[in-house]
Amino acid sequence: MRGKYSPTILERYVDRQWWFRNGGGYGLLADGTQMSETYHSFDHEGFDQFGYGREGHDRAGYSIRDYEGSEELFSEIANEFSGMKKAGKSVDEYWTALRVIVDAVNDRFSDLPLVHPQEDLPDRPYLALRSIAGSSYGIDLRLEDIDGMARSLEISFDDGTGGSSRQDITWTVHVVETAGGQKRRNAICMMEAMDAALEFAVGSVKRFDPDRNLYDVYIAEGGDGVVYLDAVQRNDSLSGDFMACLCADDRRSAIEKFASRFEEGGVISRMAERGIRRLCLMPDQPSIAPLEALVKDHPVARTASLSA
Image (cartoon, rainbow, N blue to C red; front, side, top):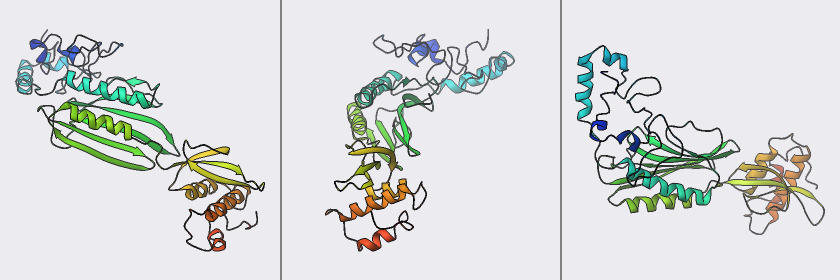
């Protein structure tokens, strides 16, 4: 039947395993091993073994019925895609690179589900392998949001940043970190050796700090029996009862942010006031104003007494 196989996948006439090498089925690597333990009806680009996507259209946007009704259209698309055969890096090379990054991620963040390009993303933290515009590959690491702030790491190969593409031998790695309310980008461009690109990518995984600017606010009790709010950087040991994890610039800002969610002059407000006073009395805290004025002007202390 004319059009049963889309004219956009001429590769199948050269390599009968092409669809599997492109991630279809269980996926097939050059050494004969599988890419996945799960069978996928679509390849990494989202097309079945006949070249059509979930909605029934191929890479050119046409359906089987379109080709059945027009021999001219079939020939036109076949000629168009015959000159678009991909050269340069193979899916196998990208997949090898992705596996190295996945191992590095798993060393730091265990028990995350691994999502393949043709699978739906879960509504919980995950590590996803992704196909970039049907051309190259990358990974998305998504951790739990904290204080409404996203925590993620995206590493992409040859995504258009830096000049490299799948069609040439050089490698570009583009890294986007999101944490602490900030987004940071970094890249290494047009590296001739894959090992150099992988060293940069793995180093980015090791340096990624998802807890940047995160503070744990807790209720503490001083030796004088006074109860107050304090804050430490996330994952530091607490000497009191945990209340919340917040994104802030420093300990004082974390206390202020937490207290602002409660009634001014209330219990939390007064505990925040006491905590701020103690921070101001610490030797390593800069003396930027007299203590009385500093606390008096604090937003959570305006309606509260200075007495503990």
